[in-house]
Image 1 (cartoon, rainbow, N blue to C red):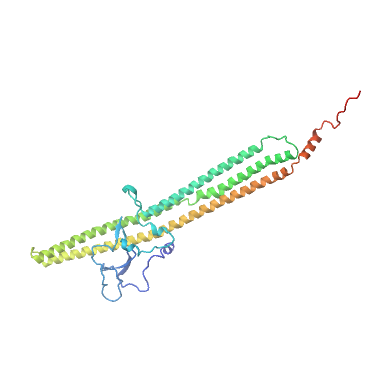
Image 2 (tube, rainbow, N blue to C red; image 1 turned 120 degrees about the vertical axis):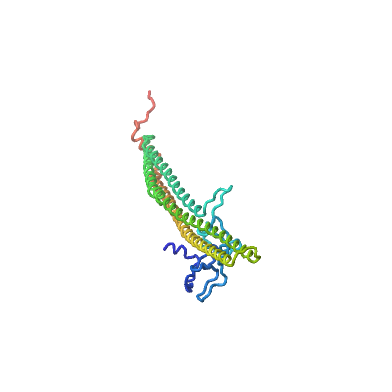
Length: 371
């Protein structure tokens, strides 16, 4: 599927050596694997083996998440660990590598998520595409008005009485205006069908698609926020239980209280339960963050693909504009060729001959008076 291919470069668990029963592998936000026993909620950085026993480096009931810092309920690696985190698509400036944090706004205003920045880029691209279509529409209007003006001018009978070879050249020049008007009308028509309309109609349902992406990622982010709050609540509860156990243990040692061993066991049991609850909440949080992470990668790569597609579409249609413009120049040049030929043939001597033959009043010259 598209999603599988999009995530192909993400760290994946080695399937050659399956985990023991009830153990599951998760990826921490800083890209490090950790393992959770779904039965006991035991958590460890070390991969459990199939041999009996539990891993050595257990994180069970530690009052913390895997090392990292939370920003707006998303856990990021500590600064000293950032250099260890490779890009998902090195050297490509891919969307999936650079929009994980929320954008900081000036003067403490509420920032927008990195995904929202990507969506705004998409919507801006759609607006630019629309404005380009409007620009081409204005260009079409200019062509249409120019064609009408040329056609009208070609019909004005100015200098219509010019005669001879010059008169023919003049008549052809006026006719060329009508031919040129036709060329510009065809140019405007092709601009409309081959440039303006494609720019307007490209991705009619684009905004609906963007809303769908937005709602999907926003829902995952809301779930992540809720589960982070649950982790913090469970963390505080564990701290309270541990403190209570510590106080009761000290009181028993100093014999400041008549608390029995049974009370200590009860406090220890509640502390253990609070630790289990914390690890359960951490597990749910990490599942949510992993899901959000995967969908962010998948969706940001899809937005990246859409942007490449949009730019390529616009480039192709702007190339079509320049092609049509070059064709118009060639057609206009062809309307001038007959004019050029007739102008080359203009002969004042021939024109004089034709005019004299048609308008002469007599070739007998006057003579002197004789006495």
